[in-house]
Image (cartoon, rainbow, N blue to C red):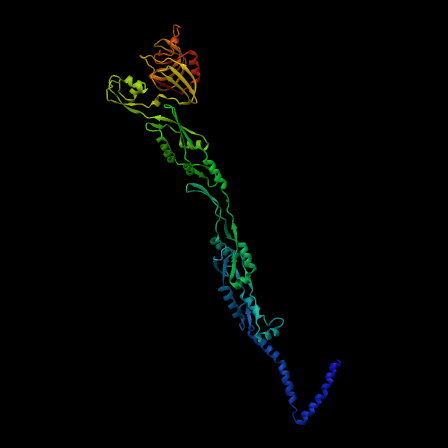
Length: 523
């Protein structure tokens, strides 16, 4: 205060001196003009700002330098501003969507399709509020100085609209997962690995669109987020191991020729088994599956190994074969001999042909209707039935009886091993024992032969020499008079065609030889 007063006191004489100078030079109004001009210069900005405020208020213009982000809206009224905002940010705005997984995958949607809407009226109002809020003169002065004002648009985001648009886009962008598969190619079963898929992560993308709305609208760019789709079946290598285990199963067909006592065993080749492997697409269980024609062709190939004149007998049904193999069981089949054509040579009789071929006469006559011993002629072609006709019962494959007429000996075999041997007597020359392949067909504890009035203990019939007349094997016969025959003749032909054993051997054989056991008689 002391100083102000000092300044003020010093100033008074100075003014008086100036008055005297002005009076002395006769310019009394000059000081007033100078003072007025100085005041006017001081008040001019205020006057201009006030006039500008009144002008912009009356016309509702935005201040110069007002920008809505990058759009200059200076000197526009609210309607013009709102129209510009609507056209720029709503109607014409497109947003580039870039895949986070694949930068080359680019999609364009309008901002409205993504649920964005910039409120034109509210945004225009924000622009107009510059210079109309708490410090209007300050805002006007800044504008007059060329400074800009930034206004952010009023943005709304409808997430449901965005979700619907993204769901449609997801249909295009989704890559389904590929399960591991097991396939047969180039003769091998192989496993193809699983490949995870992917789909649009709609919720994550919407969250980003919502949180960074202004950035996405301004830059016209947004990111699509993805989430993986794991394959439901990742590893099928255990199934491959199971397939290899199934392939180790032997699929066997065993065929037995009771006439030659040969056994054939065939196994399905592994290449064929690989083709037959079937993997259930749901449960991935492994089994064999084949068409009937495939098995028929395989059987034909196997049958060709038998040579001419022989065929495979009746097989189980195809389903039964498949079931047996699936259970690890061997399929069995008989080998059948086909009928043959025989040309009668000079000097041959029906009886001699019968003995030669090991086929009772009546079978030959039955196969050649009208044939008799009397009308047989040289050069005539006869049909000789299959020798399997003499084996009417299922063959017992692990037992066999061999009778050697020349040695008057019987050998008994079981499982290919000689079990025991016996001395026998066969038929005399006038009623010989027929050589051939026959079978134990009947058991009779004490058979009676009325032709010779004798009893045959432990009788086993092996073939019908004539319908109803069975030749067989039995113990030493007993006449009705009580006399035992041929005990001293064993080892020499003595019978009327049957094969004779001592009583003990006959009883033992009677209990061992099941129906169906093959009896092979050789000369």
